Image (cartoon, rainbow over all chains, first blue to last red; front, side, top):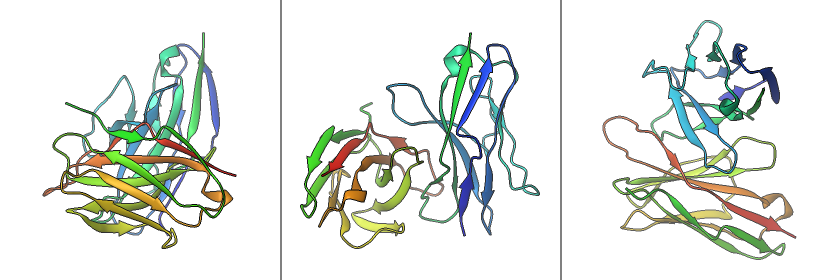
Length: 109
Length: 114
């Protein structure tokens, strides 16, 4: 079965602390993995995708096929990073996205 | 460049009624996907339309149906509404070509079924 698991509903850190948002997936083929972010009162938007191997707003994510994980990391959290983060995968030709249940990141001053 | 728009913003319906939600895709996009997001959950894929035909469907009953028009805008229709259909409905547009491209989401339509 295709599934994305985000084990933490809420992650609270202080400004300047490292952040790691966990994402594990279940998929029998070779999926494409994404992180989407939703800031307060804004629409869902793509943060990064594993095939581009970019660092966006200081965030990175490495696909670990052995552990079937795609954790999102940032070395120093900023208050403006506070948002809802969703991990998602796309695996078949229809390009549908399968989302996790999301993790709310709260960065305290 | 015009982003994805959805209408209406909010909607209240009674159980058993029918509802139509609308989505205008972003300029240059030819594919529209619909998602249902229940409170506290991530979006769930309903179906996708490409070239005016359904191109993949999630685990939703047939009373969820859709259309895509020649200008790539789309409608989501839900018949015989149930209380559990209360959710935020998201539309996402993208360009389908040789490879997949980013899906751009609209602001959503909040449907409440009483």
